Length: 455
Ligand code: LLP
View (cartoon, protein in one colour):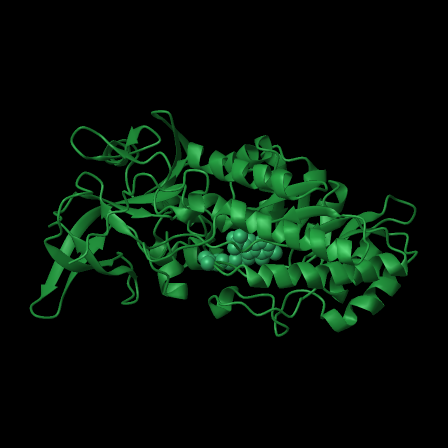
């Protein structure tokens, strides 16, 4: 039986996405897991479970790796942007802004979280394939760059920007026609995608925008997908985008921003081996540099939009073990007090994770179990075939690399309240998201008066 301990001392602290666990992970004298100087089982005791834990040092290390790599490998100006869909909160907005990042948002909710978290409007870009008028206006009024995804965006904006007012800052998103190997739900670069203008439309859209008073085209955008371990698609993308930049400039748009999206993969299980942040940035930066130089183009400001690779490894989720069911000769189900509502990725994408017991991470496994959540759904399986020492009711179990697309995709299925989230740093923990209570879930229910009258 293989131990699935995520405790791997000596992996790459400069590239958190290459690690299973936060970079501050260590063991105390009793071999219990510590993250950010805080003992995980104590956090579970103090804040309750399930609990999302985010390690500040890991978050900052990832930000600094992106910034440093852009400065080292790209001779022109650059701006990294955090794709806040990976994990959006006031704290995250403030933290990435303090590391010199801009922010990518896709809704009024994410935009408000960025603005209230202290990110200046001119460092925010608004994405989305079906933006509402409310979202477009909120973005426009706060000086946010709007990434036009389709003709509908342009039609609405031309109506919404008041005559004679400042033009909206606009980027154009197009599908680059690049295939990559990742789950089909998180692939976006191929032509059959709901996102972005078809490349064949680009020239006519660029012509349409020439001389228009309500928008100023500042850049071009493309994104090929997520959880990508290959580097070639990003090189191909640089070339396609430089071609589009050349076209835009030739037609008369002084476009200065080239936004190559995000997509760098992370290590969820020990067999995952993604490129480092430095390597990813190097390949992208060199490809953009070369593609621009070969076309004699002044270097644009290079923007990239990492989400997962910035936050995944910084996060762990703590659960308490509850019931067990053994079907002799078949399987043992071990249940925890959360599941698909706080981590919908396994049921949605068949994603794999790594887990261990918080206080016995190095103990040899006694059994192989199927780790399940508490939701009324047979597919509510967090991990299949997990080798664990015998776990009793009340033991704290840690699932690793849950910082990205867990809380942001969480739900209240079965009216289960969302977990609390804490930030850990140098032995201190701070609440960054309060735990929902069952009563909170009734907040938006309305009982029709007619029903009350019936008693
Ligand atoms: N930029 C754009 C326009 C995007 O659509 C995305 C992700 C990103 C940047 C960030 O990509 P990342 O660096 O995180 O790969 N819920 C899925 C992932 C969906 C990704 C959506 N777009 C999951 O849990 O795997």
